[in-house]
Image 1 (cartoon, rainbow, N blue to C red):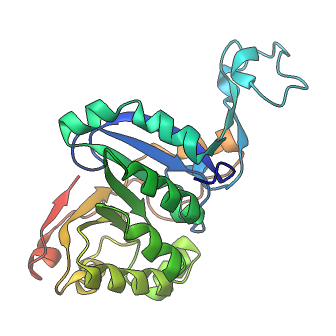
Image 2: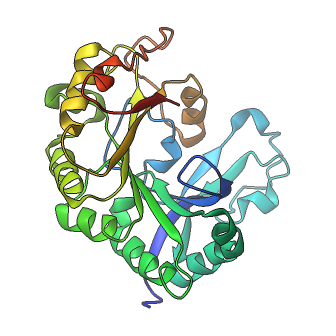
Image 3: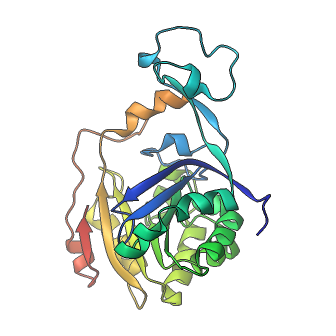
Amino acid sequence: MDKQKTAVIFEVREFCLHDGPGVRTTVFFKGCPLRCTWCHNPEGLSPRPEIIFKEKQCVHCGNCRGVAANLERVCPQRAKAVCGRIWTVPELAREILSNADVFVSSGGGVTFSGGEPLLQADFIAELADFLHGDRPLHLAIETSGYAPAADYQAVVSRMDLVFQDLKHPDPVAHRRWTGTDPAPIHANLRWLKASGKPFVARIPLIPGVNDSPEAKEGFARLLEGPSGLQRVELLPYHLTAAAKYPFVGRAYNPGFDESRPPDADLDPFLAYGIPAIVM
């Protein structure tokens, strides 16, 4: 292994139950090329470590002045902390493998998420090869699919399961709400379908953005046909995202009516014979 290869990660969350089979560790990589207006992980947008400041918890003790690292140790109220740690492949592998017995006994493993994990594709590919060694673990990735084809294929080919996020089927609306052209996503989705790799399509259900019958039918058309698709998971929008934005010095301006519940009707998917559930 290349001991110098590094990645910036903002959380290693143990004992997760909803990111794949069994008990899992979910690794959240920092950095994302999309700017979805509803993003619920604003701390994952920047690819670099950054300071999180929770002003309401600050008692203005002054302990953090001039301190650039280990802020958690000097802030008695944990109002200020560094979000994002640099890991090497061996360091992260050791952290993950500390729970190997739990993974094996439960049929679980590791899920790579973000942010957008494919921004650090070389790191994940090397880590995956190591984790698929003498005691192979179940590996999964949750990705927007917005990545060069070579990166997408190199990483996805090493996974046992893919959570393929989809934001909007219409290119114009996709650019409006995420800031990106969906063409690379759709191309990678076509490759994923043709590969036969098991995958779950995850769709954040946003009121007035992508919850119309027409939008759902558009998703169904993208997903129809032979593939390893297991199901569609609709994730209804929730109101908790806005509270995180001040912590990283960002404004939350979603641009849609947050008060209206999204339309969670599954019929447009079922009409295409695609299994779908609301999470």
